[in-house]
Image 1 (cartoon, one colour):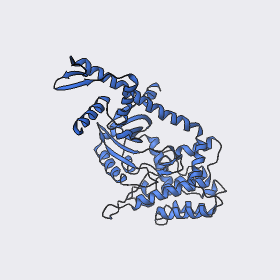
Image 2 (tube, rainbow, N blue to C red; image 1 turned 180 degrees about the horizontal axis):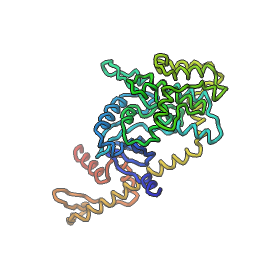
Image 3 (cartoon, rainbow, N blue to C red; image 1 turned 120 degrees about the horizontal axis):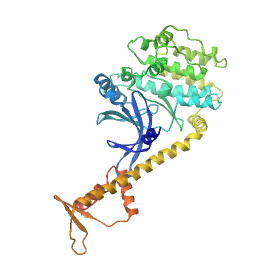
Length: 408
């Protein structure tokens, strides 16, 4: 635990990014909260998903991961987490993506249960409607020439549906599910978790289209409303058989107060024959929105935001403090590193006696380094400015002087 805490606390450079906190680690990737710095104090919090080293050595996985992630990077929609960057640093392939301050549905529902608060049906329907909007956009996405990209998420699960504390719903991990399905070293428990949300055609290895994601969303919505996990089993084979052959009971079997109209929507999304299922995510969203518009209460993003803040009030301040502390440690680390670096340079240089009223000039090979007297407070200010711009104090001062010499 102590080693884990140390990993979480210590900022580390990762290419042009600074990893300031490890959020999670799984069989496929490590996920970090990171900072991207730029000119004039620009900075942005992002998330880095770094592929585990053993997967970087599997050519088939790497190829599929890169191809799928390139497609996902073309998606730009309010209900889809944006991918900013895709690449390789050292031996690590990574995705840099949008940071959302919120929680995924895998945590939201249990949190409500823990507090004895039934998760409101209308909030579940509202979230599912927003997921549909993001899915429909991705499913219909074309290239520059109008050719369909045929993007299918393949992994619509509670952990990939994220709700921010401002009430915005986001779908995560477009583009890597297909690659993830090819991993041979995934633990059995993780495989079972994914299997429980697969469509029948996905279980049988058939070619997939957008209707597969609709089935998976139907499974998720069924669980949110009933509190009952739809497809379970003691083995992978048992789960697969449950999905392809098992009977799906109407939601009211487990929760009698679910409206018939909502039941009908869910059962149509869960049709095992995909030709009888909703054919597009827009059709499913339309029915969800129609029901909500006629219901006694139609929630907005503000309602959803307030509900989440009430659920996680005990974690909000803690998380803000954690992020702030990580950023402060990063700045302090930069200052310490710069002081050490300057001391090492000076110790290697041979001083040249200065002329009257001139700053000290020191020689090192063909370079001249000018040292200026500066108190600790001013130096720390410069260090912070340099850190925000992704450089060092020495380089910052060199660029300033060079620019002045060039344009004076």
